[in-house]
Image 1 (cartoon, rainbow, N blue to C red):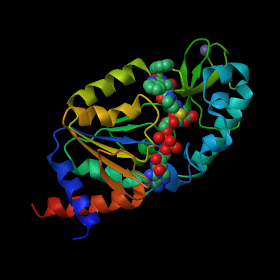
Image 2 (cartoon, helix red, strand yellow):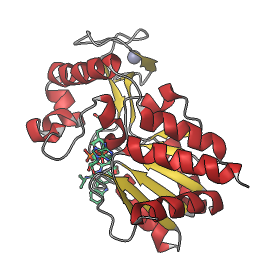
Image 3 (cartoon, protein in one colour):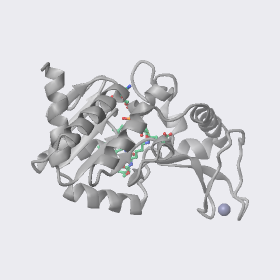
Image 4 (tube, protein in one colour):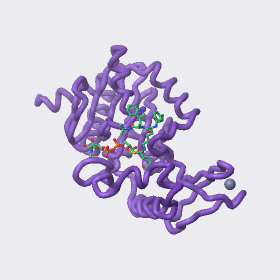
Length: 248
Ligand code: BJW
Ligand code: ZN
């Protein structure tokens, strides 16, 4: 057995034996779908300033520019689809008692793939919120540069969490419940720099739980690291999990 094989086998045992395992995903899991990541050489923040596009201040200064950027990203999401990583995760979920998924991604691909027990902690790029009456609605098109609220004609914003904004209160309390009982967290395709998500792995490790990281460039030094693309790794884990459960 190679070192990779034993890492995979260990991960599968951890998933089977954990009482309350949890998945955290980031932009890397949607990379194979053609969705740009944020950081690194090809990341969005390499060519765009986060402060100009992903803050409330930026939206208040120039909502059309911000909507242009979000419409461009919506178009990419609409032109593509969930990949083998999202689909493998759904199957892995179906083989275990409970495996909630928390994603930082706003593309909605986990939900499109059929993931159950899902928290989209940074919102959804296809949802909007009215700046005036806070009404939440869905806008699946990518053309409108100044979408207005059906209820009050106020300006709509993307219903995502920008820098400096609090996460939705209910979302945070659901996450808190999961974190309290979590004894294994599998962190997939995130650079782990954006809080509060960046603190989840450390919290689980700090109370004696296990941390597994799947990333093309792993960075959590206390984790069991599987270096590789999410799609390839999750498919291998799925196959191993299926054969391990068959042999029982
Ligand atoms: C692959 C792969 C493949 C590639 N397979 N892997 C505590 C300390 C310090 C700062 C703060 C703190 N608490 C709060 C802050 C401020 C701030 C923050 O964290 N700043 C840091 C940058 C320092 N956080 C906030 O403002 C948050 N709000 C908050 O905490 O409220 C309370 C508060 C307010 C004010 C002050 C204090 C407290 C909100 C954060 C919202 C983040 N928003 C964004 C945009 C969302 C909407 C949108 O999409 O437009 O969320 S920013 C962006 O980063 C997006 C992502 O969800 C998030 C994380 O990125 P992710 O997913 O990790 O992507 P990348 O690109 O960074 O990494 C990709 C990874 O994939 C890499 O590792 C690759 O190697 C890997 N990879 N291909 C596997 N095929
Ligand atoms: Zn309104």
